[in-house]
Image (cartoon, rainbow, N blue to C red):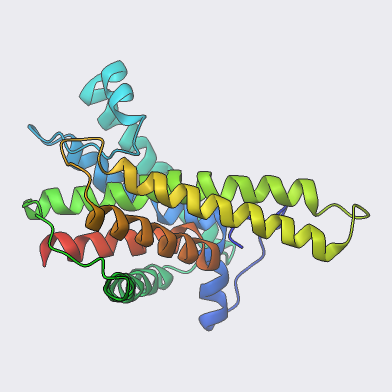
Length: 254
């Protein structure tokens, strides 16, 4: 699972094993996903752009407190800090710059597969329909997609799934407390409930604006939430965020 107990960061091996280990590292994930946050933040500073992500309950308050110039300064600090941390991680062998391109390619591949898989599931369940889409500029599409990739994966997957699983592991996977099989089954049960609940809330969050609920879009988003959760649990936050980002880019633009 994506969230575990205490772990020690060790230098990544080369090749595919090194890439898989590095992109699952919480420390690396925190840095490599910052470009998504920055892209989203830049979009918010464009005059007339009010496309704040529904899962982002923080940025609007922050801009109201520090103003746009203060917000710009904060983003500048984030850029400098992320570059510094990435240099340190690279020197320690915890990350390799070429992994970034591989991460984007993996996210794009998973996003395309996810889209076809969800449509197949909905077709099998006779839930397919037509939904009216929105038309955005390329800049808005990139900003919206980046916000969705970062904030929605942070809130609905990392916090709402990773958090309960981490707590369940601490409670149930203690040495000497019951049988191991029972302990694991309890953690799995907590994780399953977290996935279902977070996916439903994820779908509902898209209707906080002017869009009305209908069976097609609600089902599509709920099933997509389950798929994103699976990606998060297997590959970690960074891959889930980039998959979500690139999938949304494809949907918005094509």
